[in-house]
Amino acid sequence: MTETVERTKNGAILYDKAIINQISAERFTAGGWPHSEVLTGSLRSGGRGNTMFVGNIPRQFVLRHYRRGGLLGKIVRDSYVFAGEDLTRSFKEWRLLDKLATNNMNVPRPAAARFYRRGTFYTADLITVRIPDVIPLSQYIAKKDRGEAFWRSVGQAIWKFHEAGVYHADMNAYNVQVDKDGDIWMLDFDKGSLKSPGPWQQETLGRLHRSLVKVLGLDPKLHFYAANWEELLEGYFDASKSA
Image 1 (cartoon, rainbow, N blue to C red):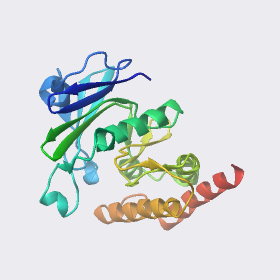
Image 2: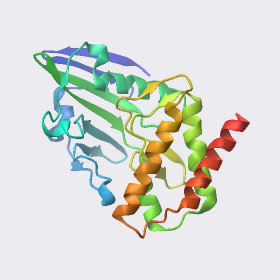
Image 3: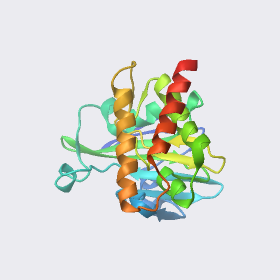
């Protein structure tokens, strides 16, 4: 990939010329595209309403504005303390995705990122290439019972990320996604990083489990059972043994 950084009056834009050959601040707004639609979904899979599809098929993009979650997000919605260009959340995620996509990991290909400074604070945005025909794991298992082979494949896919040292800060039933062939993808690497093996691997698995249990609470008819989680773990640990 070709990384290019253009300085702006209030920040900078990082982009891949092979994907977007010209970039401007307008591209980080809905009005800067001929078509845009806010991402929505069932079982809260639409996130915080800060993500939209932009552009036209066949090359569509996903535009995400960084927004805080939790209690702090109710007070400070989308501002972060500026500690340097390379430490902005958008630039860090872009570069992590760049490494992972280059190594053929199932992640969105990064197109452009920017930060916009307001004094000691900044806001940030990220544009990635839309992955065709993927849906959140929560939606995939809402349709029908997926069976042991599928759940084992989820565990195997997670192990592949962990084997590469990929830490996902929010691995949940929405950021784990499934394409039309049943292959697993991972989205939203905000605060993600590359790490040596450690307790974080089990912590991310625990986070996914809590998310699945929470989604099951939203829809008790969801096809997720205790046995499915055991199947996922079996796939994970079997993959780790054969590595």
